[in-house]
Length: 288
Image (tube, rainbow, N blue to C red; front, side, top):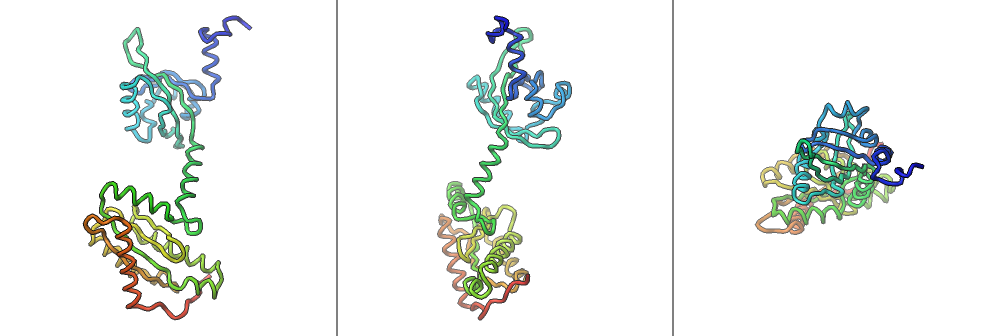
């Protein structure tokens, strides 16, 4: 082995080292022009060659363009960005999550500011984190949210002092349904209820299974009139759930009321409605 190969100061040794790394190494201009990539960076970013890569700016790959600006501000402030998380969309459409560690370097010949960095692919780790988080806030049977998510929402909306509404829904006679037709039929009834509420809610609303036969539909950023219209739509569509039946009550935040107080008022509204409209005498089996 050549003595020069024992030192990273040797240009040939350093060049081979960079090319053999599994992490992506890059050099770009501050404006995003791609100047050089090692083989791993080409693969991470989805380019067949450096020539292809140089036809685009690195900023065009960012799924959230503001991330680049925040990274530049960090570099300007601290001189280095360490494990900065960003998301890129490759030319083939695949989205990957990367950790970028980089610093700025001044080109002594041109005075241009360059960015030297290394990219680590953490896509699989982020997917696993999302799966684990979903498992912690999702009801395993119905796929809708659970009480843990409700607590997250409560913390967020109360901190922002936002308006919200809540619809409390009880599926009628779930115990008798389980006793008469079996737990598989009872599970199917719960799934049908969750899907019904999802179908008749807004895109940003959250269907939460509180346990047993009780669901809460959380309505963020909603006024009373809009909430009333949504509840009317749910009531008008209850035939879609037949032969299942349910009771519901609703409320919209008043004054500085917390989220639990709104849900409690919706629950009292449900009890009042159920008193006026008794539960059917016997459950009917869902069609297979």
